[in-house]
Length: 443
Picture 1 (cartoon, rainbow, N blue to C red):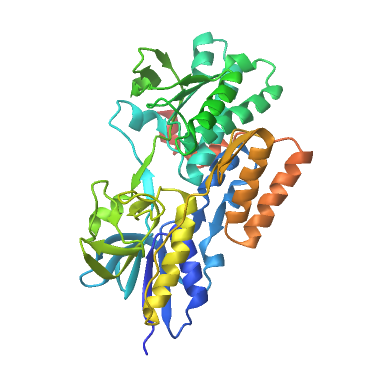
Picture 2: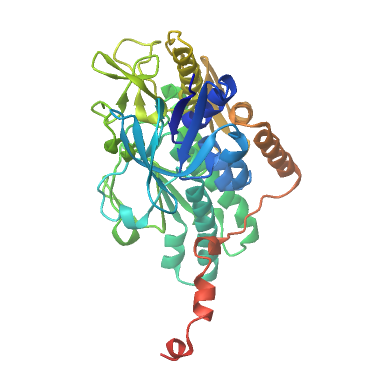
């Protein structure tokens, strides 16, 4: 029997966990697993706020693909097209000509990208918060703004530098805001020129509540805790413009800000537009509870999907409901999907995915948090501890678990690092200036 080729498109939560499970359950005689992703690592996104705040090393929030997927073939590149009618994918490697990869089964898991709106100035001045690069950039940028504010004698420049705006009150926005404010407040001990009240942290949320994944009382608690830290919380408010870095809100307020972080939701990867898979009105791939892609009433043989880019029915709720785009579902769906692919290859029937959402945990900075798990609500230090314990248990590989725990342990005894490494973002600038031809320098 010729081994089946399983192509995994994307190495995020779904792709990595599915590939890892498939490579463990199937022998080389049964299947070959090929993973395609432009990045050499999987980013554990729940740790982005802690990595950005300096609580853990950014390297420890990512999982190297080649180390974890030793039984898989890893291709560094981007899938630019999938023609499932021919069971062929076109891959653009990070360098060189395109190549075609034929497959027997395909796992469509490119994930999601930031869902933006056509707001004037957002493209030029906004910062996302979905990748490790964006987390590192935001950390360096915030610390750099403290340096700018401390060095200037112009009150307008200082006020602008110390105004930080976060758009979106979901988990990503709340955790990013809370962790960055916590880090900046900690850093001010080294800035005698600045006071905590000089900083202005603004949260802009279009709805009337934050953290929609938990009950309203927990969202209200979160708002109260942020208000105690003198943050400016704007609910039922939209960002209308940020041209030239001047933030204009729907409530009529307007002010300049050097930092505008966009965390207002996600949408399925645009890579799906280059496939022949069926989509729903939100551009997600339509799936059965078995994680098989379905076109109306017809199962698309050999095609599977899960995670943020897939519309997977939630069997724990009324018909018409779908699983939320969360890491909790993605990891469990990946395991169920991998087992189902194994079942199909071995001639067995696939099994439905069914998981009741266990709840949510969120960090609000060091030793502060909010949690609602299996109906139990916690706040403060216990919630923060649960947040760390849960995510430490979920990050793939023993190597990364140990490194994260070591980072946290050292933080109990050593002060947080609050130095900006802004040159990382343009490392050739100084050399390019020094190596200009003599004529160019004179001109």
